Every structure is written in structure tokens, then in C-alpha cells.
Image 1 (cartoon, each protein chain N blue to C red):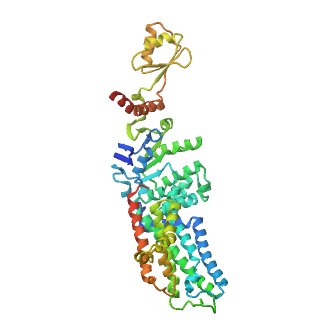
Image 2: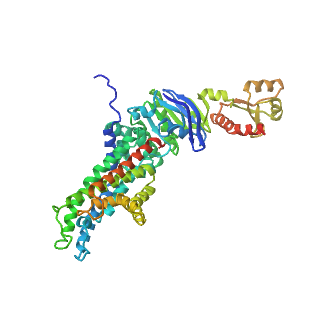
Image 3: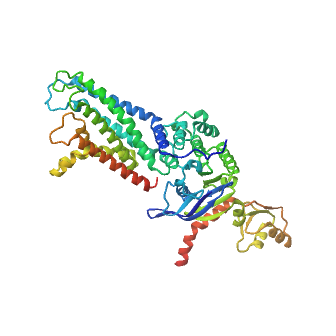
Length: 306
Length: 259
């Protein structure tokens, strides 16, 4: 269990995170989403005690990260920025971390095997590819067999095989009852991995919800309609909150109303429909909507005041 | 078998082992130490062989044999700076401070490990370099034996001084968090600042400069105390204060600043 209480972080006069509160629960993968620069990495650093919050506090399992006698067994972290001396071998990097906690050599060998690094364990990190470096970061995170995993953009720069590996790893870690908190700026990736979402924009909480609820509530569903009388149908459906676009002649993409309403309207006016397909809401579209609002809000305020 | 709580926990002794492992597993450490030792010995032998006995006199035999420790001052300083500031440039510091979020044990351990490696190494190097240089100096005005008054004290004093300067550099590295900036500050403090201050026409400044780190090391390296210089005891105390104070400030900053 990971909790942020009204976290605020200011660097000089720039505020990176404002009054951010959320709870990450065990047994599920929680996606931490936001556009680049939204404050995700800053929040993760505050959760680990690397950065001190200007206000508020963060706890892991009920107390601050630094208060734990064996922090690596509480939280395993993969930070976005590389955190390894390039001149040391993968094995010795993990040994250095293991020694601080009295974690035995056998556990180092185990996590090297788990992340597929056994063959390169005695090579210096300098020569590692991005993917191998990322695997080493995961190995370090798993070293203490932690109850909470905190991963900042773990799929960044990975090849498709690596992405799939991370996805399955995160799901299996959550299935073991661990708390998995993973940040990303890619909604599509989270759609495949996460069950729960914490979304931030400009350092503020925008949503704390499940993936399913988020999509349902966002109204981002698009219905795909093919009809020979596209213009007529579009005119009949036009209403506040309904968004109609077209990409090829005779095809309508309708948002803001459902397939039932479209079908009934067409039937009432004798318009033949060749296709009426309710598309599953795209998580990406919902995410864009939400963050666009967060960005536009201050501009609207200024407009009103003028 | 009962299920006991996990034995894993961070202890000062474990952090010490980790820091020792960290230093030991970098190739650069061993290169640095070998170069430090070999340069000192080679300089001692070279200067001894080249000495033709026509010196102005007044040169201290230990100071003469250990002129190569000028390199050791810089080399061991760099080793200390790499141990602290180096972690910020590689990003290793984030892994380190995530494993030991209380932070301070890391700084103490780094200082302890550096001391444990620098002191025996410089002492052994000095004990080899002095007789090596002396083997060329028999019959000259610089001829001296290990048993002569002050010689062993100066050889040990130099080793202690070099070690304290290395720890001072480590603390400067922890404060400044940048390898080139810290190296510049270290060399500036040890070698350049005292020379500049000594040019000022104030007695008080002259007195103070005698206790600057570089000057204190010179005092510690002489078998026969120079007239007007600090005593070896007060020089050692001054160096301990310089290093101790800088380390304390580094610790205070490490506790408060974001990583």
C-alpha cells in the first residue's frame, strides 16, 4: 500500500506537483498517467524520499520510506533516469545494493536469472543496450522481494519483446498480491496492463479511477455508421454534445450518443444503414480529452475575466 | 522451523561492506592507487639519483624523498571525489540513497573506506620510497636514516596528511556534486589559495595560512621542523579540523538537499 497525502513540490517558483493525494492498493496494477512534465517522476522521487515534499507526505505500508529498517524489501524501484555506475558489472551493481541489507549472493543470482541477465552478469554496464539496462533496473527493483513495486516508464526504449515481458511481469507481480505502481505517458500501454489509473496533469490529480469506469465515464465511445444518406442522418443527429465527423464519403463517426439512438433515428426517417458499429471507447482518446481540458482550463478562466 | 521475520535490514556495518565493495569493483580505483604509489616511489628514486650534493642545504631529507606525494595529493583527492561527486554524474546516487534512505551512513562509510585504503597504502609507499631515495644520497647533505630523529614521524605524518586530504576531497565532492568542480575546488584550496593569501601584507593572514591544508601537509612531511612553521601536532590538528568540519557540513547538506 502506497499513499500520497496532499503532496506539493516546488522548485524555486515552479510548482511541479500540487496537493496530490492518492492511494495505490495491493493486488492490482495501478497506472500513473500524465503527459510529459506532468510531475510523475517528481512524485515517484517523493515516494522514495529522494526529494522532500514542500508540503504533505508520502507513506509506504503506513510509514515514510526512510523509516523502514529494510527499505528494499518494502519498495523496489525503477527510476526513469539511469541509476548505475557504467564501470561496474551487473553482478557487482546488484551485490553493492544487496550488501546494504544483508541480502545473500543467491538472491542476486536469482534476480539476474529472472531478468535474463545471467549471461551478461559479469559484463560492465557501460556496454549494455537500453533494454539490458532496463532489465538490470528491474533486477535491482526485485532484489529485496518487495511488497511494492514502483516503476517509472519501464517500457521506454524497449523492443516489442521487452514490452511484452514487462507487461506480463507486472501482471504476475500484482497477481502475487503485490502493489504495482507504474508510470507512463502512453495510455495505450496502460490499457493493456493496468486495472486502476491515477491520472495527473500539470502536477494536479485529474482522475483516480478504474480503467473500465474511466472509459465509461469519459463518453469517448465512437459509433461507426455507414449509410448512403450520410448528410441527412448527420443533420438529424446534430444536437449539443454530439460530435459527428466523417473520413470517407458515406461514413460517419459519431460521438456523444449511442447506437440505439442512431438506429431509431435512422428507422424513423427511413434511412438505410449498412453498418452500425459501437466502437469500444479508446482509452487514448479519453486520456487526451481529460488532459486537454486540464491544459485549456486556465485559458478559459482568463477569457472570462477579460 | 518457525517462520522468523526476514533478517534483511540496513546496518552501519552492512553499509560499510557495500561501500567497500563499491570501491573495490571499479577498475579505476586500482589504477588510481597503483599510479599514486608508483609515481611517489619513482619520483623519490629519480630525484635521489639526480641529486649531486650541491643543494643550498636546508632541504629536509623526508620532504625531498616524498616530493612525489604532490601527485598523491591530487590522485587520492580525485579518488575521494569520484566516490561522492562521481555518484551524482553516473546516477548511481539514486540507487544508493534508495537502498540507504537515511543517507548519512553512506557518507561515513565512504570516508571510512577511503581512510582504510589510503592510510596503509601511503604509509607503505613512504616506507619504501624513503630508503629508495636514500640509497642514492649516501654521503650527501641529505643523507639520513629511518632511525634519525623525526624521520619516521614525518613519513607517518605525510601518510596521515595525505589520507586526511583525500577525505577532505571526498567531503568537497559530496558538497559540490560535480567531479570537475570539486577537483577544481580541491586543488584551489590546497595549492593555489595559500599562495595567493601569502602575498597579502597582513601578519594575521600569514599566521592563518600556516594552518591551511596544503601547508599543514608540508609541516607534517618534514623531519626537522622549519623555523616559523607550525608544529607537527598543531598541523595535524588543523588538518583534522579542516576535514572534520567539511565532512560535517557535507553531512548536513546531504540530509537536507534533494538527491
